[in-house]
Image 1 (tube, rainbow, N blue to C red):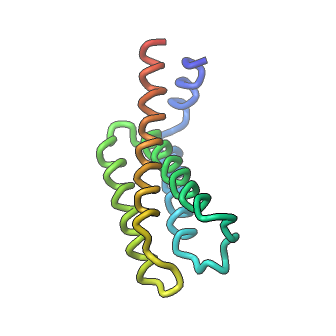
Image 2 (spheres, rainbow, N blue to C red):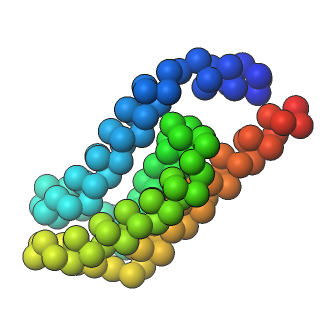
Length: 126
């Protein structure tokens, strides 16, 4: 199964992988900066943090898929993006900056990187 997935992942052209990553990144930024009335209301506060973590985990997986040789750049860039989003939210007037959101973003980057590196390791040993 690992070889089939590895073959499929490599079969997707690099430009297309980049397009998917940058489209997802753009969607996260836009959704992060929209006024809250344009977004579904979070059922409870923990779900908001989970959304941050899942979103940044997904961005990390897509970023490392699109740019597999730029691991440090992708990880550092996503951490900076998470901080930039929080600063931008604080400047909007309709959103607010939240250090816990920044931490959730960083946890998502860590989780996404862990997932990618775990899969890569299993491919090498499998």
